[in-house]
Image (cartoon, rainbow, N blue to C red):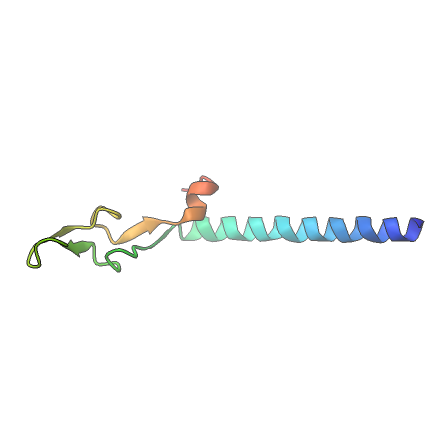
Length: 79
């Protein structure tokens, strides 16, 4: 019984350490590259009007930059 508890404790500790390492590496990735390409305009910064075919303007999602902040950067408050 004692050996089973020791194995469970060791396994739980190993899983927690791996999860912590994954979060640290993901945060480092976000710190290095917090932006990603905008899906709406495909990185161009311009969108065509849905109503008028010849009209175009700035993409409302990325405000014309073609880049958006990654979701994890919002979640982990990385900038």
